[in-house]
Image (cartoon, rainbow, N blue to C red):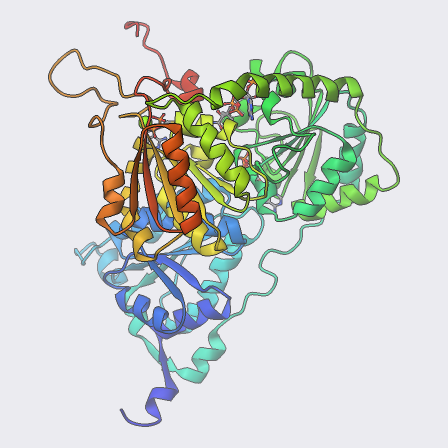
Length: 568
Ligand code: OXT
Ligand code: ADP
Ligand code: MG
């Protein structure tokens, strides 16, 4: 190597890495291959943590949830066409869920792609990504890498967070330029997600409506958890004295055991409330669009706090829209309320705590049954106590019955500890989210998975073992989707919803050097999970669940269209 020349030149590879590092991005979730294999090697050599997955979708889900947990864009790196498409589902998921994420994909040569001449993995990736993300950019020249990445970061985290696509054609990586000029071309993004201060009038309007309520309710969504304004929100809720209902991933923002928590009186508060304050939660299908029988007969007023102005009036009229970032809005609420606030009528808060105690008492005995094979409640009773003993642990959860029942049974105590299927109810987030959660937080992870749900990302148990992560996967194995008991009356094929009976998922973990356990009773399950939490070793527990225990689609069976011709 000629002395001097090495120092004076840089290239696309190095500029991408330098630009990421300059912006404090130190982890990349990826699957290597042409044209990004060397980029990964060089990034690793430069001190970036490269986490290599077995499938891009899982790397993408990891990146998305990393963004949610850290408020920095999670980075997923993929190869061209098929790798890109595998990652795209996760990018769309991140956008839908308001997680900041950047999908960086290598791509083929523009000249050939644009003339459709059949390049290796040819695809017009930019055009395909565009409708599925907040923004999509392509960088063609090495000197534009800095500005390209800066735009991607800002687009991902500012305003309503979401997914961004960054297209890097193969040729870019090899482009050389003067090292000095290269360094100067990099951009450190200043104030990527600026505070969005609400107008004083909107704050006053909102508090006036809230004050007028006889039966007020606060609904906390995952936007509120994302905002990391935990203390402000707690102060506000407690000062207001208003019952709060956490959406699934907002559980633990204030403890589920908090006296004002109305999680166990959900249908009552939705029906009976007269004023509802939404904080970082959308009135989408998960809240029945703010109307219909779940919301009862009485007229209702909605106040909504959101960073996205166009969210207001999306489903029903919002009488007091408050546009701003949740941290700023809630602290403005707190300031305005410092001069005094009257708690809601005791009649209302009492009615809710009564309903809540009723529901909790109704559930309690089910959680203590020692049946074998287990039912959902018997198994979940064990896991409820595991999280109680380890409130710092992160719970990842997917499935149908496994999801819906775990959500209700397992209390969460701290913010951003429950990571699940999100807005789309998507299966497959499990192992990707578990891996990112362990890496980004350093806390142990308990992944509670339906056997079907697990199958979507199951190969990543190898990844878990390879990086030796403190993840305990518990598979609720009921031999199928919803249940393992369906029978096909027409021919010898198995019914569409059932799997191999008595499958031993624990052996998958053993294949890669992790700990596998088959648990057939709550006692066995308890012993195995406690051991995993104590050891921090990659563990997979095959929890044998009664194949008849589940119900169709868990708690959302009502969404299945029904044939009028064929009775079930
Ligand atoms: O107030 P009331 O009386 O109503 O009572 C409520 C609470 O007050 C009370 N509660 C409590 N009681 C006592 N104690 C406590 N602590 C407590 N907490 C609450 O309990 C009730 C219920 O409360 P909850 O849950 O809060 O309320 P509710 O009414 O359920 O809330 C409504 C919703 C809509 C907000 C809620 O249900 C919700 O969040 N649902 C999300 C549902 C969801 O997203 N499901 C996933 C999708 S299902 C389906 O699509 C599946 N697929 C297809 C598929 C998917 N999804 N993705 C892809 C990529 N491909 C295909 C598949 C393949 S699921 C699935 C696999 C399923 O099989 P598995 O083997 O994985 O799983 P198993 O089913 O286990 O076999
Ligand atoms: P959930 O599924 O928990 O109900 P949603 O994903 O539907 O939550 O809603 C989250 C909402 O939070 C989105 O409308 C998003 O714009 C909003 N949001 C995200 N981050 C912030 C923030 N920092 N400040 C204000 N709103 C936010
Ligand atoms: Mg199942």
